[in-house]
Structure formats: C-alpha cells, structure tokens
Length: 310
Length: 312
Image (tube, rainbow over all chains, first blue to last red; front, top):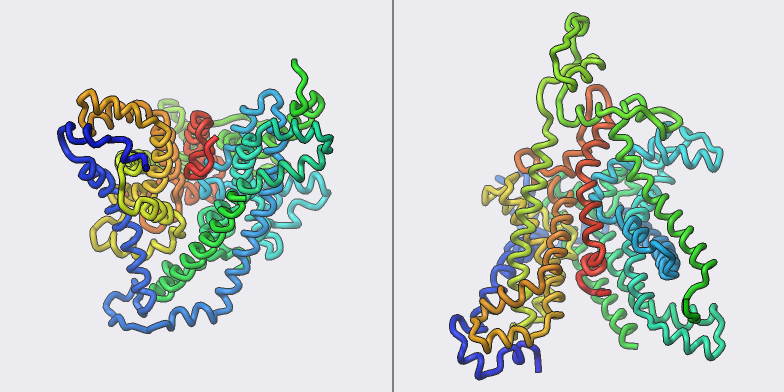
C-alpha cells in the first residue's frame, strides 16, 4: 500500500473540507510541470525540429528548408568533431581517474576520525562551491609564465625556468592545465561521496573479520572496496555527466585553445551556434550530445543498480 | 578510552590528520591568493618571485568600483588636498576617477536574479515535492525522472531555442527572463531534495491534524512545513549558489541590463593592461559569501550535491 493512501484513510477524507486531495495534488504539481515543459521540453523539441533544417539565426529572412539528415551526416563525418570528442574523452577519463584516486584516499584518511576532521573536510570542500568561471579566470593568472604562482612553485621544486613553459599556451600542457584545475575544484565531491560510503559500513563487519584473523589488507579488499563500490560508481556518474557538459571553467581558462587542443564538445557547440551561427547544424550537434549523455547515463544507472542489488 | 579493534591507533590518526591538513592547505592556496591579490598594488601583484608579504592597499577595490582615465600633465602637477581619499589614491598613479564602474550593478543583478529564482524554485518545488511525497500522482516515478533528466542537458544545447524564444517574448537580457530560466533549472534540484526531506516526516502527524479538523492546506503549512524548514532552507542555499555561479547561459543570454557578475568579472580591465588586483577584489566580494554559505550548509552538503541520492 503506498503512502498516499495511508495519509488519508477513507473516513477522514470524506470529513475534510476544501479541495479534494486529487485537486490539490494537481494544483501543486502543475506549475512545476508547466515551467519545465516551457523551458526544457519545448526548447528540446524545437532543437530537434531545427536540426533537420538549414535555419540560421543571423539570417532570419532566408527561406527555411528541410535538409533531412544532412546536418547529422556532416557532423559525424567531420574530423573536427571527432577531434573534439577525443579532447572531451581525454579530459573526462583523466579527471575521473585522478579525482577518484585522490578523493577516495582523502575520504579514507578522514575516516580515521582524527581530531578536527569535520573542520578540515569543510575547508577542502570550498573550491567545489565556487563559481567555475570566476575561479577559472583567476587561474589564468596563476598559470602565467614568469609571474604566475603555479609556474613559480613548479620551478621552485624542479628547477625549471618559470618562463620556459606556459600551461595554457602550450599544445602539450593545456589539456593538463584544465585537468589540474578541474581536479582542484571537484576532488572534494568524490571525497564527500566516498566518506558517506565509508561511514555507512558498520563496525561490526570489521570486528567479525578481526575475529577471523583477516589481515588489514584483506579487510580492505574484501570489505571496504566492495561496500564502497556503489558510492564510487555514483560519484563517477555525477562527475561524468558534469564534465561532459563542461563549459565555463575551460572557456575561461583556455577558451578551447591553443588550436583546438582543449575544445570540448560544449565549447565547439557554442562556436557553431553563437559564433558561426549555423543554427541547424548546431541543433543537430546538440541532439547528438543529448542522446549520448542520456544513453550512456541510462546504461550506467542500470549497471549501478546491479551492483547495488548484489 | 575503551579498546576497540576498529578504532584507529593514535599514530594512524596523527598520520591521517597531517596528510589531510596538508592537502587542505594546498587547496586553499589559490583561494588565499585571490584574497591577497585583491589587497596588492598592481606592481606587487605581478612581482617575481610572487610576493607573500606585501604592503596592503585598497587600490584594487577602488579600481574595481570606479572607471578611470589618465590625467594630463598640467592637472597632475596641481596638488588637491580637498579631494576624498580614494581620489587621492588614484591620483598618485596619475589617473583620475571619471565615474562608477559597472561592478555594483552586475553584483546586484546577481543578487536579484539569484534570490528571485531561488524564491520561485523553492515555492513551486515545495508544492510539487509535497504532492509527490503524499499523494498518488499518476506516473509519479516517470515524472520525477523526467524532472531530473532536465538537469543532464548541456546548457549550451538548449541555449539556441531559449535565445530565440526569449527574443520573441521580449525576455532577452531581462531580469524576469533570467529568473524564469534559473527557476526552471533549479526546480529539478528543489523537487528532488525537498521530496526527500518531506518523505522523512512521519505521515502520522498529518493524519492527526486531519482528524482534528484541519484541511489539507492547513495540515501542509501548519504541520509539514515547520518540520521541513531546515531541509527547505538548505535546499534554498543550494539553489542560490547555483544561480549565483551560473555562467554559460548568462554569458549567452545577457549582455547589458541583466548581466550577472560571473560573465562580468573576467572582463574587468584597468587602465593599461589587465588589472589583476581589481579582478581579485571583484572575485573576493563575489566568492566569500558562498564560502560562508558552505559552512552553514555543511550538514546537508552531500545530499545537495547528489540530488538526495546519498543521505548521511
């Protein structure tokens, strides 16, 4: 029996005055649904429609004609798009791997319950809550050759000349420049989720393992890791979706450059839509991106549920 | 202390503690650097090696709030004791203040749009969440998933049709348009989070109220709402922070009247070259409120960032 039915046993429901529960339910839900339909679903349908046309926002007087699947064909056969996808994949994979490793380690250490761990956890979380555009913009200052703090610190430890390398102007270093800042910002996210996972493991399991004389190492691999896996997977899901959409931080840091080395899909899409004004083409691009995120996310959620059910 | 096999030893705690504190201090450096740069003179800000100890000045803040121009030689020679301190400070550099900068306008736009969209997202979100939590809504799970899925879309992907729609409705670059847009984006978060908080309030309280002769509405705002206050408040802070930090849609859909601070701060340029102390001052004023909110939120952080998927 579901909760709604229990909330109003039939005799009470008849006594109460005013609107029926059904009416209230609709009045309460309707505004949300209407707003989401207007601001999310309607634009999405419009995007799908535009993706089959040659419409261009900056040429409103041109006759709009249907071009069928030509926009989609052009995107999928375009080498630039694949280069963008590769840059995105590089960014996604490395940020997730590094953040999971550091985030889990931090959570594991915090879970040792040293004094003041709450305070330090809150401090570590700060970067995650801040505006990526504003912070990203400031990181370009830290990354400046010669005067930047980052270059100074690197040269202090390695002895390299601080003006000999530029994190955001070098083709080899720029992809790592954005990974470093993203890691700085979002490792706390993975850490918080892992910490919740570690705290959810009951002490009694470890006590039982201790009685069975299982080594600490064995306890880690047979208790900690399997029990924290669903949490780790959830963290990866969130980071994956967020970084697939990544725009603000990278636009401010590198603007997609040098060349196209850090042009992630959202940045490429923005150029097509708002700089080249190829509206039909960019709409098809948006549809492909949305289908990709949605498809990958649903497959992943299925896998996550399987792990949880185990 | 009682002995327990799961309690880490003192040595372990000490090692873990110092590693975590070390990491925390390293992540704090860029933030402290922003705050410090805001109080540096422009010469100190680009000094090599980077200056940790410096003579603090509010030059950056004065530059942030004013627009300036170079003074002619004749004007510079003439000493003026009657001018206010900030004008004196600017004159030392050979500049003069010609007016207020756009920063305070942009900051207030952020405040209006942030609070406005948070208000509507929470109002509508609470109503919808209550209905989802307590009534039999047809296709409930599908609707909830639909609400969540709107958050997966890259903002740029919907920006084109929203841009066209706003232009046709006269909402481009208006506060109302941005409030509507951020309300829609934040609704997914507020419905999911508040739904979770209301689910945790026992239904028995309302049943008792209904038996006492309350109507459904009365039971909702006299019994359920007071119990959900902390949850709703922390959800509100999350919505506010999102709207406060949002950049992609703001930069595409606003340019003048309704522009918020995030697209504006990176465009701050002083007289002759990028004025990093002014940028840092603008960033400091913009970021510090969020840090304060983070401290207030710490108990509900996890829940907020995972859409209620993980509850401590």
